[in-house]
Length: 184
Length: 249
Image (spheres, each protein chain N blue to C red):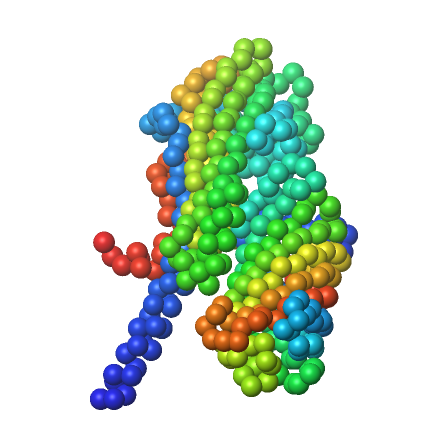
């Protein structure tokens, strides 16, 4: 009870080495057809539970002062258009969070890993169920308590099978997202 | 037979997972100083000759920048001095003061701490560990170094001053899943404790300097007290060992 009161009075987050973060992020996938060969406008909701651990003290002394955390994320995407298909993946993730701001902390992140889908015979750009997913994104965490943040941001995602089967044109998409994280 | 054969890879995988996670969650701390750690000193002093001590200032710098001394650190310092039993009472500046005109020893402590978190290396290694889907987590250690340089100034009631100096440093080694704030706090605590012990050991060797000569009341026995420093090991301290290393040697 006392702890809760302290957090309410002082919402400044303190991240040290070993601070862990669990989060849940949701967004909606919007397609990018980068070439004329891309015909599928796949889109649909995405759900991404994640875990991360802070592995550095703050780096730097200027506006770019920040901390690195690594972790992993599960990715579930339900493509609703043009045909319903599903994909689920596991992606290790690395994130750099700017800590110069106190309760508002921008970050950028990269993730990449395996992604299983039922694309076969459904999506002309991809021919296999075994794929990879790569993600690069930016976001901002708004700390509402010293341990809880609301996150919003944007990710660019690329799904392809790394040439393990053909065709392999790749699917590219934007993913605006929102979510929350709990730090402990 | 078939069941036995098929269960072996499963058993192996489970065993490897347990060992891997165990090793991956490990951390250990090594203390490297004080370099010139003397033999722990002890002495027997007359109880009545002891005087009060006033901890006047604790100045702390962190990588060269002055910071406010944490209350816990002040308590740790005062507790370590109190444990020597060299002084009759212990006061801290800003709190209850010893009676004026009474002989007392005034203490000023300066602590310069140096932290090397190897942040760049940790970031790079974290990337490698992530890229390996965390399979390399048990095999790639992360490091955090901490050093403390303490200067102690002790002023006697008659204005005579003695100065002492001690340095200690240590490293925390941990795997990704063993990283937690307590590891770093343990490292800092142990380095500080080792440094304080070294300082107070030097003070104990000068214990007659801090005693007031008081007339012995006739007929009463001389009561004495043993003074000394709490022992702290300067050797590497394994806080937690990997499961694979925990078998008897």
